[in-house]
Image (cartoon, rainbow, N blue to C red; front, side):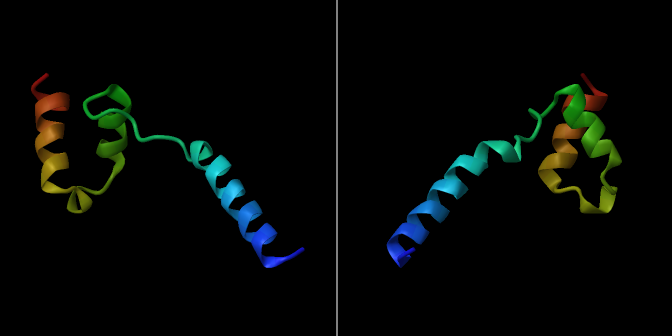
Length: 59
């Protein structure tokens, strides 16, 4: 197989595999709140902290 065909097959495979990676839950959803609650609080960003307070605590 030549280099161009190999590159094309690799690119096509990568493109088709992207949807299989899944998506992060929407900020403020129950799943998002649960996922963030499991994450160590030291790893939360400032935005995550504000969003958690706004959507998961103060509803």
